[in-house]
Image 1 (tube, rainbow, N blue to C red):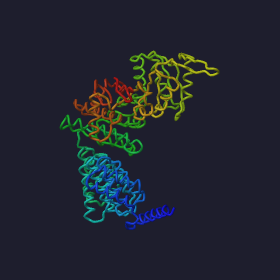
Image 2: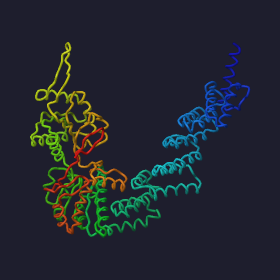
Image 3: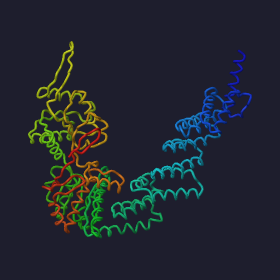
Image 4: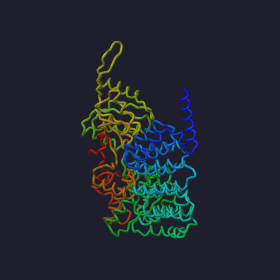
Length: 626
């Protein structure tokens, strides 16, 4: 009993010495404990990895309060880092957790940082060092290595962000200037347009937002994008009026109007470039710019330019602005109400207006000056119904739609087109907008269908009835609605035995969210859209590749339709049209025009007539089938 008591006392004393950081007392170290540590250390030095690991692991297992544990963790991390880096990381993390007062704590953090970097786990480096206080030297070194790693991976924006973290940790003038120079070099040599805009948004006002704005101003000057150049000059001067570049910026600002007017033909672009619709307006502006760039590359010396107006910023001065710049045609606006506002102005000036986004049915009656290059709901309904009836051979249809103006409009539109083509509408059943459980609407659809065309086989099991099979009396089921709501609805159809029917939809389905939510239940579903960036069409592939290269983002339907609208006008210029009237006349006669938003067969009664993109869900992805 005395021996057991003595052993407990020794263990407690050893634990106390270990926790308080006292120097090692040989009298408290068991012979085997010392032997295991010495063996592990010796074999580690001899690079006999397996024996060293075994010895240290035995030490950790048999002596959980050993004075040698911190060093054993470091040794085990080194022994595992080449072959099993995850284990090496776990030993270092355990070291940081168990021995926070150890003198080697920052060395352990640096080792862990290097393992994270080697594995590409860059965020873990930031999470490791961010909460560590008062260790500027170590943190600065870690951030420097992380910035270099992002640079090697060509994630220059991330590299800049980490350098700015490092900048807060250094105080010497030479070190500060070194970090500043590295940041400026990234801005001037590596960052693309979107990354520069992100720097401005994140760091304005002050450094490095000022440097990013200077670079953006230069990029827009080179590109001839005078609207964005002017916008950033004004922003720069409002936040950095005492900057050394401010004098040059004021001079550039005074020259923009003259540079814009220097082009013989100016196409006016009227879009929402501020407010909630700004992302769509910016995408459309990108499309117009790319069309102009390609035209100039194919027609060197052509004196054509763009003059841009943000309709959200200035409405009243549009007509005088159109006259001042002698614009020959207009691309935009996106909204129907804005087209209504601008249409009388272009009509008075005998100009042509092509809207790349407005869809109201009355727009084509505004006069000979207004053309729509946008896919409308009516056009989708017609094209989808025609494909379903003529190509797929379907005759009977049903609709499940959200009970709101949007859904009721789609239901009415599709039903009318089906009936025109000789098809039959079995039933249209509404559900409440925002619903996530569609059981009630689906059951009502089945009940009404069973009273008309549907067939169900039911068996009795005692007092209960069980449906064995249900054959819908319709071959096509139209599901207008958002990607999210329809993505939830489709799997519930299968639960209610609505199978072996063709699911038909609208362009809002064209979203990764739809595929994720509907899963394999959407296999074979068909819908239409006005643009499909994965299209195998060479014209689309060329547009998408060049758009990505130029703007470092994905094109959307507005950029594609604006690109085509601008290209139509430029084709008239290429054929020798000079005046607004000549351009309007030649564009109206265009036939067989290849566009990024579909092949245009003609322009008829103010509508661009083109082939839509017919899309089908195959093996969990969208594919074009026409």
